[in-house]
Image 1 (tube, helix red, strand yellow):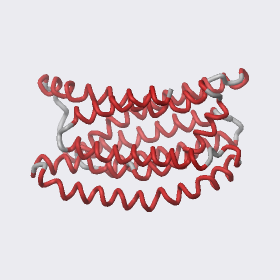
Image 2: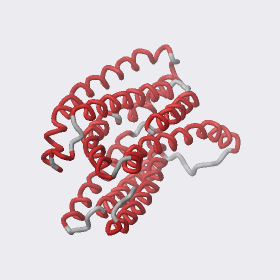
Image 3: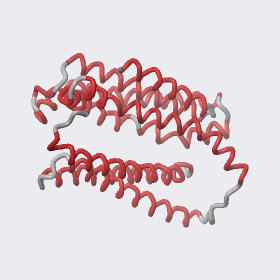
Image 4: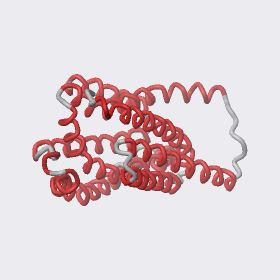
Amino acid sequence: VKAPSHVRGALSLTFLLTVIGSAIALATTNILAVAAAWQRADIGAVSRISGQLVDIAMITVGLYCGLGVTALGLGAICGACTGFTTAAVWTFWAWRELDIGKPRANWSDIVELGHTTAPIMLSRVALQIGSNLEVALVSALINPGVAAVYALTDRVLRVGMNIVNPIAGSVLSGLAHFVGQYGRSAASRPARELLAVWSLVVGATIPPLLALNQDFATLWVGRANFGGFVLNMTLCAASLLGARENLLAVILTSSGAISTVAWVSICEVATRLPLMY
């Protein structure tokens, strides 16, 4: 990313710590999938919140101790470890309370799972690449300074999406069970209620963040590091559309259209990258 030579070592270490943290977070997601199948959204909520709190705390401590950008990697790996430990211990005890017994593998189930999850895996990889490549492209094609302005302007909106997006994730298992028991037509009313609740939360969350983004960025890193009104509005629109897409994807996934949702996501990223370039 054309970083100065004196900070490349710190950036490399930060990148390594962040990658390790991401791998741990991926393992946490697999554990929380078991809890989600039991409709135990509280396990996922506590795991994520505890991990984020530790992440913020370690970044603060690291910056105070003079670690610089490495504090970001330290926060990422410590937060991921906290979330993983919370999820693993709680899920283990919940498993014992339910007295399910040891998991048993069935070859036909494994094959069916592979056919279902293959497009999902590809779509998740594509979405992660697409959503995290923006800053790198801006840094490589323009300069790191502009990339920093872009990222800082987008930061507050991403916090808002962390409030909005869990609504969709928390209802996936329950909605899927409802569709499986009563059929797709019966799920239309819960889906409408879900869309209404999502819109209410968005209306209460995003406009204040949008209005305060410039003041927050000015207070945090200075007015020069705020991208301006046009960039602010564009990023807000993109965040809202992405969150709405995520909600609709959850509704479609719960109705059984898993592969369709995955291929739509892949096509979206394949279209986005050339347009970004």
